Amino acid sequence: MRRRRKPRLFSFPREVELAWFDEATISGSDRLALEAVVDAFIAIASSKKLEPNALDALAKGAAWPQEQVRGMAITRLAVLCHYFADAIQKMEQLIDHPDPAVRIFLCAALANTPEGVAVPLLARLLKDDEWGVRKAAAKACSAIPWESSVEMLRRRVETEPDARVRVVVQLALDFQLKAA
Image (cartoon, rainbow, N blue to C red; front, top):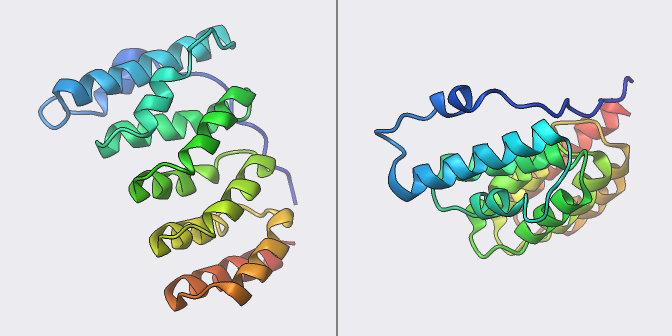
């Protein structure tokens, strides 16, 4: 099996990034937060380094109530996890966010982080109090072959109390075993 490489650290021009978001549907403070996320990512991608507080707009956006802002920020943080330990720390902080929707978005984005980041964080999310978060974490374990997730998934199949989640954990385990 060919190992996945880290994504290239680049960004599209600001106008291209923002063109995906209609100003009629995302405006006001949501629009300002989205622009801050886009601008922060472009600055990091252009310089290939983190200035002090460079991740603040991304971290704030990752917990933003508006889904498009949240999605943009979390996916950009996931890419940055391949390059910067500070981005990993920001992702780790989201695990404890009080809004389950933030944690669910986080689960999906973890499939785009390095295995050493994704698997430990997904292991924690598989123990979340919210069944929807656990289900999202299990589903993320079906996205990429990760050898290190097999034992975690085996243990979780045995201990998962919710049948809706247990089925998805079993599917993830089956996927990982076939990929091995």
